[in-house]
Length: 103
Image (cartoon, rainbow, N blue to C red; front, top):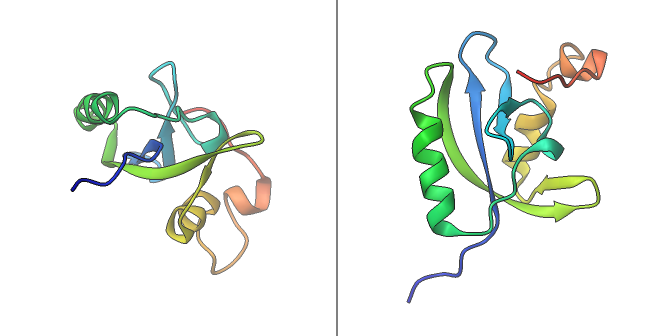
């Protein structure tokens, strides 16, 4: 018996900067999870992932569970919460500047 499909977002790392990025509804990569496309259909999710994995400017694209939040998608697993906020050893990058710009 297969498990029901849960909403997903597509995430990867930007090849040049190494930043965590997300695929938006318009097909562009964004750095803010709240701007990511929340996908509710398994077939569409797999098709979008296949296209994302062909993008030469990203590495390690994969689907991850997400939930609808007040301001857009929210992570449902601690790993994705950790990834979106950046390294935890000291404040720098996203944590220091609060910057979340489009790729």
